[in-house]
Length: 114
Image (cartoon, rainbow, N blue to C red; front, side, top):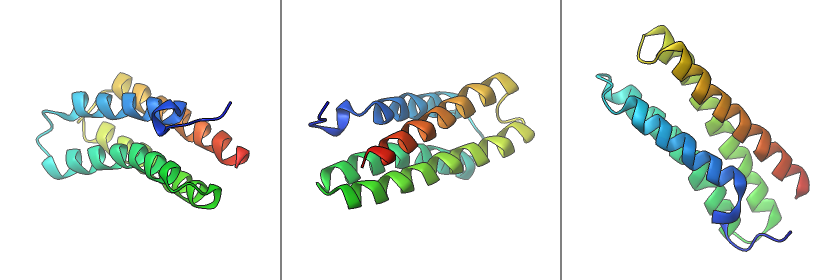
């Protein structure tokens, strides 16, 4: 199936849900710098998928997908600190970490097709 626009990419859609969850969970975090970095990392996943797709070459798209995978790892890494600092509870950690892992796997699968 040919994808004609980045909005049709399932990994981008899932990254949007992760981003919304991060915004909803961290909206009242007193540590603005931490919350802001978490939000920016999540948005970076979406944006790199979109930007890479619009480059119209598989090589560039692939590179941007690897950057998006790196942003997934950044989100997951920050979640460990967030739960240890009691910014989030264990259920929130599990939800967000599992979403980030799912997206990373989707990106790996997409990379293999290019």
